[in-house]
Image 1 (cartoon, rainbow, N blue to C red):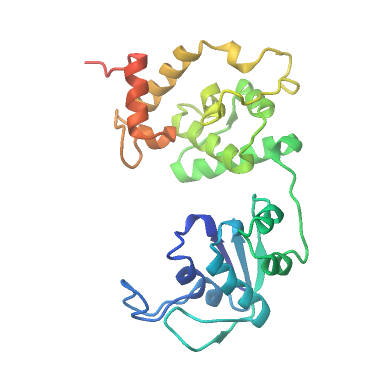
Image 2: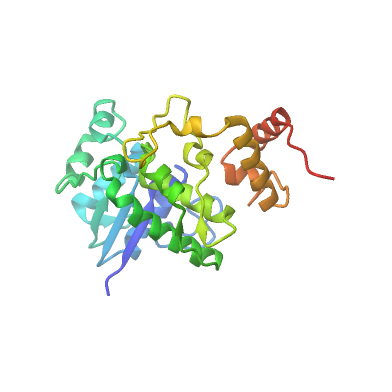
Length: 272
């Protein structure tokens, strides 16, 4: 059983990325109270998956290139090298060729990583995968919440199949997570605002795969009424907690000040 280490490069602050990847010695920086192995050391003899590799800062790209060329790393605060035998798999949704041309990504690192490229089509070009992904994400949410979900509602699945998914799989996963949190029964409804959350007014919703209905989704509901109803439902779910961990603003992916402004505009107040 060889190690498989997954690292989301976009989720680590630039000041910590080198320590996370390559480790550090005690006293290497403020807060480094003890020696720590990095992800590459932990993956020695196995595989490391660098997700969102396009988010790596340039100085970290230099050190990653060294790992690929010399098969060795140096912990922060150390002058010695450590040999590592690691297979590197990298993924990104950024256009690395464009980033190379703009000097945002090193050309030599790009060619080192681009030995065996695999391009995954956007979700809108493989809609047949949506039901399978929905089932997987519902199962994940059932396990995380300690609940049981059977499926997404028929109307909800039509919305999911018709939407163009600019955020691809992560956006779909986010929609299912929110819908599962709000669901009261085993069949999970998908509110239109969940699918359109965070997308500008110019977002396109195709109706070619939406069954018999050919009307744009926006015309099926009174927008303000639906928004107010949805916000109330989220607030009821959080006990009317707006800010903080698990609050309505976090679930809706909005700043708390923006949510309060929307509540005032829509006349949303807690019942006495």
